[in-house]
Length: 537
Ligand code: GLN
Image 1 (tube, rainbow, N blue to C red):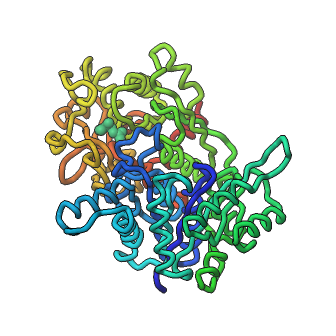
Image 2 (cartoon, protein in one colour; image 1 turned 120 degrees about the horizontal axis):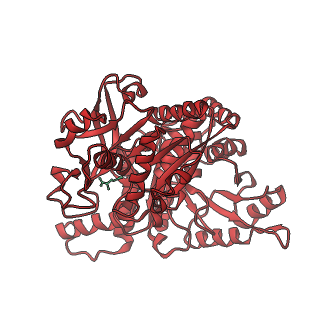
Image 3 (cartoon, rainbow, N blue to C red; image 1 turned 120 degrees about the vertical axis):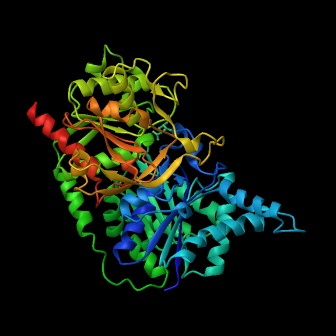
């Protein structure tokens, strides 16, 4: 079968969940046995979101091959279990950069470089790129932003051209809109959807499928009305009502026939109905897991999306441990010696979150000290691990000024220091230690047991600083062990205090690789330790 392309656009408002719809559709097509990939095209000018403040754009997700990407790629992976790559995340900045580099090289000598055709051609090339590298039945392309945004225009023009070139059996548009409920009138309103579809039509794109986000059930009358005004079959007007969990969306989409209608429109005879067996098992287990366990997220970003992958990883591990994890954000900027006990009261465990810069780090260090001295399960991730190390250096080893070179380059004890290969780097974008690296685990450590006694693991990274190996032996002799080491560079990737129930810090980001069907082993073991701790108490 020739590769088929599904474009997901959004109208009326942002944050309607295009990423979840794209991931759900991917999941359903995958369950039908197709090879798929899901990619995201973002209309902003940054080359990647790596340099964006999480307040602007939420978490920065990192692919195995080391691309800093939009957090929607995290959804794609968590839903499908299929790893994405740098080809799955493209921004306007990357498009322009490659066109401008080519222009400088002289590839277009004599030509005026224009948005149409040069930028749109590059967008088209990127949309088609994944399928030139691997056999794919379906490529789902999510276009960031909302119809009507000035910056989305070249992407929509590229889609329009591709649909024309590939034909209706190979290219199709799914448009996601919003149907608001006006409480005063007691009515659901379809006008914004009609307007949004008209805007798309004005750009030469007729959506074949509409997904209507709504907080209230839409009746047949409304669906017929939308179909009638938007030139869409009634069967292709799908409603996506608010659900208690994003993981229920694939099942809801299956029930509504989203995948079936797409297949039929693209000329594919749907064979067997997708087998969502283990997915449904997960949902069932999740709904049965009512017993709550509270985990503190100690960080500085007062925004859910900033720690998206961590929250989801905790939720996955919670389900498989038959618990409902309540992740409670505790702002590290507000943590003091005096209030730490109150702030962490009732928490079965804490995650010390990743981050950059010195804002809020002293609070993380105080939290680490508190949980270490009270033997509360603690999971430090990246900057969180570095803070555990600094806390140990200051309070156990007695290096009062211990710090990371990131925060104080003049500290006498830089227990966290800049990596050698980072010292000459001046550019900020895409220059961290990114993507997967090997890590050898120390036998008999808690981490090794958590990973099912594997000797070698691979995890994703995103950092510039590292544990300073000059201090390894003094840390170890005082009880903090370096239990995960990169076999080629000797970098310390994991520290743990074996004498405590669960006190582990990882320089890498395990949260990027936890999926619904494969919860991450470290999160699994962390939650288990948290549960054991609460029953004992
Ligand atoms: N700021 C730290 C570093 O660059 C940690 C980064 C992170 O938490 N992702 O090493």
